[in-house]
Image (cartoon, rainbow, N blue to C red):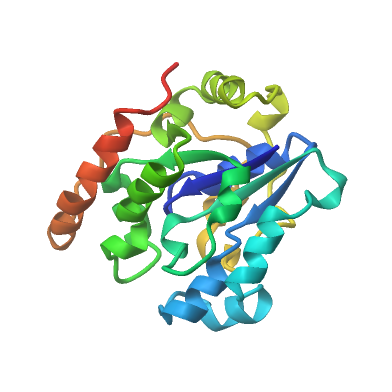
Length: 234
């Protein structure tokens, strides 16, 4: 089975990649189109030049690998994708051969977390609009990171049942310190998950959105609420 997990940044996406890697039967790939996105968009992300140099930046070659054989002799292939990386003209036909899952998180949490790592935050950066469009195009299963944090075992078991993958408790724990499949951007973005060995507990109240980010929250919230209405429930 090939799984395309679509998620904006700061959205439990790396922890989910670690959970699937911990199964033992899943190869994983961290943000396959990131370097291609940076080269085409020219976006001034942290470590942009290093990312482009270290990872495949030709979107056609990345897509061919997505569509190709499952690597490392594994039974399943988990690909952690970000919707805003799929720029116009980037191949998407490979996704038809995948189980598509859409991981969402309340935008007030995403904005607060993203702003802690990067000085500017835009609607394009956090991917809510692009994720809605991809869901409309590809369909698939929606899960909310808030629900995973509340009850990881129950939600992951329900997700696995929905996509036809046997659940294993191995998905609930992983070694501290990161994963060999991490992209070179991990040193900027992944400190918290590198310090973890499993899913953190339920999140507290929604953070107060800074005045400067309130228009961003207003723009992102309808996308989240639309997808939240169709999310998997346990």
